[in-house]
Structures are given as C-alpha cells and as structure tokens.
Image 1 (cartoon, rainbow, N blue to C red):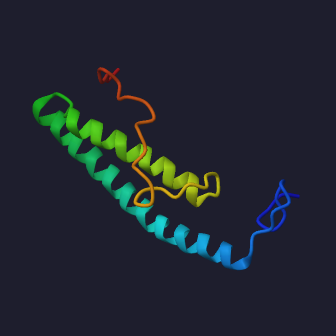
Image 2 (cartoon, one colour):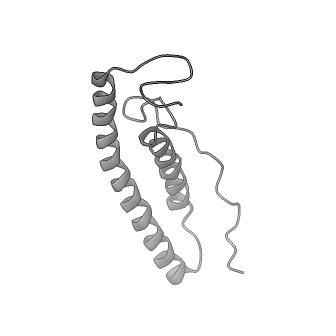
Length: 106
C-alpha cells in the first residue's frame, strides 16, 4: 500500500519531513483562500464591467487566467499531487491555456 511511510520507490519520509511539508501546506491553504477571493472579485468586476460597457475587460480576463494557473499549481501541491513548491519559491506558472478569443452568452 502506498502512503507517506511506504511509497512505491521504498523511500520512507521522516516525521520532520512530513511536518515541514505540512507547514508549507498550511501556508498554501491560506494562499489558496486569497486566490479564491481574488477570482471571485475578478468575476464580480468582470460582470459589472459587462453590464456597463457590454464587453469583456481583456486585462482582467488575462489576469484571472494567470491566477487560475497559479491556483491549480497550489492545489496540486497541497493535495500531494505535485512536489514543486509554488510561487514564491519558484516562478509563477505559465497559463494552462489561453482565454477564449471571444466570450459567448448562448
């Protein structure tokens, strides 16, 4: 059975290594909450902008797309699906995919 003490490659993590990873995870859980709030605010702003000018705000769309890519990297780390510590310990990730060329409402 695979787990933190019995992995496929036979490496057993020490409790101190697990504790350090837990501390990073707690930090990134806080970061993730900030990212969620940022995405929610961008969404509300974007819809307010849409209602007023009837067009999407491309800088906000691009920023939101980058925030989503970073949030995905954070989620992979905190759920033990990725080992690379996200920003600020590494560079910000690239976009996962570009925003849609045109926004549709149908």
